Length: 266
Image (cartoon, rainbow, N blue to C red; front, top):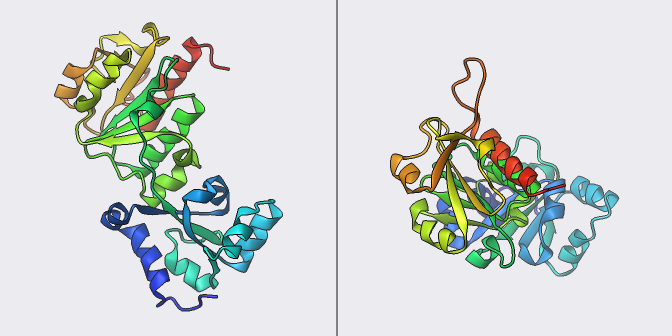
């Protein structure tokens, strides 16, 4: 059992939680909590750490992967104070894993034989918003998420927790400039709709039965003008009262579920 917070493995996990540059350099990130641990593909886990309480909870829920990890040497027991040192949360749930990052390809986001449904994010800064968008996108049956510009690090521990496991199931891709992929999308029959306050039509009036991609902009500034100009059209979400704008994750959910409704999603 690891009982010293000064242990090098302990310091390494803590650093992965705090430093995006280290996560990028090593191709790793941290996922913690019993429910999230259950969602991680076993082959993606580089190493795991657990307390006796965390192990008991996993065994109570019938999760057998932790036993396999213990047998092959990838999982180690740690003391409660050590897990607190590693963790990004105030009250750790007794288990965390260091996970290998995956690289998703276009064929995953644009599957053959169907009309793709994508959400594109430009400069979304709030980790909770980003994680919730992934969660909503999976729930609405989207094929993937494209992250552009200064959008938050998807491997930020707060983002990972907010996805509720969707990060392990939904393909995603990061681009410096969203416009780089516009031609790729159009060649696959995808129409690009920019969500903007000055949109030409209400979002529910458009046809999303064919290939569809929605672009959501920064929480405060919205989409860049060049991004709007590069889209096929603009749509807006009508709002009553004096509300000026909706939360980015709420907007994404409304747009995706309208597309799902038109496609007969049940």
